[in-house]
Length: 249
Image (tube, rainbow, N blue to C red; front, side, top):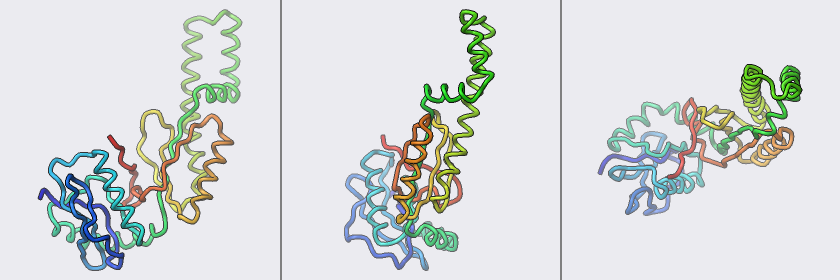
């Protein structure tokens, strides 16, 4: 045994998992429950040299889905390990107030991760429409046969600056338009190619309303390419700070 692998945290009142349920590893390690006071951790033994392979990522998600069917569960990120069961119960005892508050706050809610990027051609048209200086410089360069090197360089710099400004504005506007339909918002880490990476905590009963709001933004902001992943376990809302669901190999 190379440690205790933690799938999630629930209340001790949470219904038990099916007997003999398998989790990560080959062969699959049996999933069990470790209790401490009002809290329970859903755990198994951890295999040696754990890596984020597709089979284990899916097993992690499957355990959380099964456990979440009977009540709220705080999902741990893939790869959450403790040296042993005693270390797990020590953390449950130490952070009991926090975990109980989070269980209550996340009950009946799921996470939706929204990413957005610009449609390059559409956003270039948009910044030209919105920026008289760019239009004038573009027209002047056209009339002079393309303009000098300095003129072309200045135009390029202005276009890049205008697009970057638009990215920041669109990220803020996207969050403002969607957050009224969510219970909480967590801004994820910046990543190449995306102008926005935002996770929304959404009541399961309001999911259709949230997705309809996303579709409204798609229709009204045709220069944005919006991607939605969800419903997901609320990874981004277990603790303060951003997070994303793990990617598969």
